[in-house]
Amino acid sequence: MAEHRKSIREVSPIDVYLRLPRTNCGDCGETNCMAFATRLVNREVLPEACPPILQPESVQAYAALSLLLAPPVRAVTIGTGDRAIVAGGKYVLQRHEFTYSHPAPIVLDVADTLPEKEREDRVKAISSFSYQYIGRDLTLDAIAVRAASGDPDTFRRAVHQVASLTDRPLILCTLDPKVMAAGLEEAGTRRPLLYGATEGNWKAMADLAITHRCPLVAIAPGDIALLRSLVQTLRSCGIEDLVLDPGSFTDDGLAATVQAFTDIRRAAFEGSDGLLGYPLLGVPMAVWLGEEMAPELVQWKEACLAALLLTRYADMLVMHSLEGWTLLPQLIWRFNLYTDPRRPVSVEAGLRPVGNPDRSSPIIITTNYALTFFTVESDLKGGHADCHLLVVDTGGISVESAVAGRYLTAATIAGAVKSSEVERAVDHRYLVLPGLAARLSGETEEATGWRVLVGPKDSSGLPGFLSTKWPPVAPP
Image (tube, rainbow, N blue to C red; front, side, top):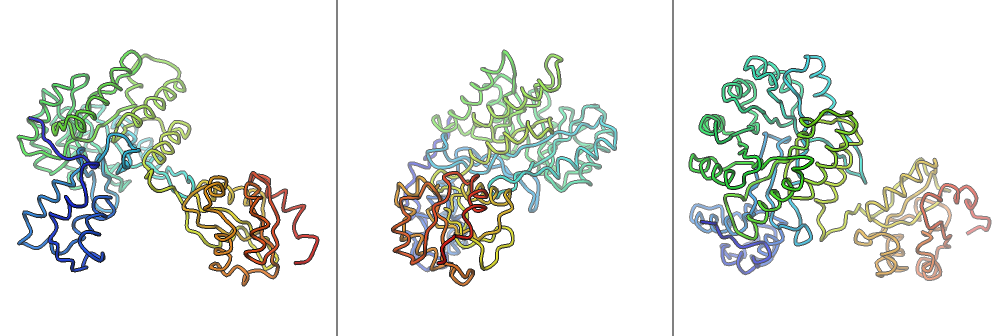
């Protein structure tokens, strides 16, 4: 039978409050248990932040609370220590309903048939891949070691080499239990994800997963009923940390792939089907197994499939292409998909130096919306401008929207000027206001006592603006 569990939208603070000790002791840092319950519902804290509920006499209450707050899609941890990654743990079907948790790990493969030097270079390239996007470092998360040789000794050597070169979590990929056992001899203590268990090898793979306490992938390409049956069988063996691979087909099978991912995720949420409430594994690198074509075309197809699977509920991706133009769209799309829609991406407000400003350098006003801030900063640095960037707290909203919504006002600018003590950093009394906030110039002069220069509407024009308009002709 399907397991029923309340969705995140159905859980109220009262539901949580009734399962708490209700001592109002304040040990959690909140004023009372109701305030703590509200933060639990919003997933801002964990139940473990309540010391009384961890006491022996509260075992049943803790279990009931954990069940109530458990996501319909189980969270599965791969790896150990600081580098461990989490797949799944979703509370909602659609991102706008709440937020998506645990950004989908992006995994790159390494074949055991590669020459040792090429394998080393590929592992180092995967581990060092990084791209800075609006102040965040976007990186790759794990490495999948593929037993392309089918030979236990070859696979063992490859796993040993990869494990010695990186601290990133591993996925061991083979359908042969003997080959998998050889790989586990080298990496079993690192809690790798085992790929995987099929209708034909599930017993041996389950034994390996249990022995080494590793999560396991259940594989049933194109057959959801078989996948569900396989999960039930593996769970009866005592395995709960499972990842589901329903198959990633391309070309004529693409529509069926998207439909399968969608059907499985809907079954977990709308049908309360606990047997399908596990992370979904997408394998965009499957495009490399299709018909032979130009590498650039295959890479393009892989990038398209990866983006599509991320959109349609994949909780983890295994890719092959290391080219930046195939990976960056996935990393940026993942970043945006997993941002909390309730909280705009923002930076800390305050005074920031750009270049090497001195006491005669201009003061540029901007908002704390991350994309706005890093765009302005980048344009100023690109133009070799030395200035003070005064970041006003607008709740993470861009300039034009903040002006329209009254988040960027003369009063908030005056507050930022005062709290940042910018007058101590410069000898002049001029502020450069964004062109999109030009209508605030008069009010800002009255509120701050500073003179205002209206800059360009687009920050790309700031270097040219400063070269002709700074320093101001008239003294402050």
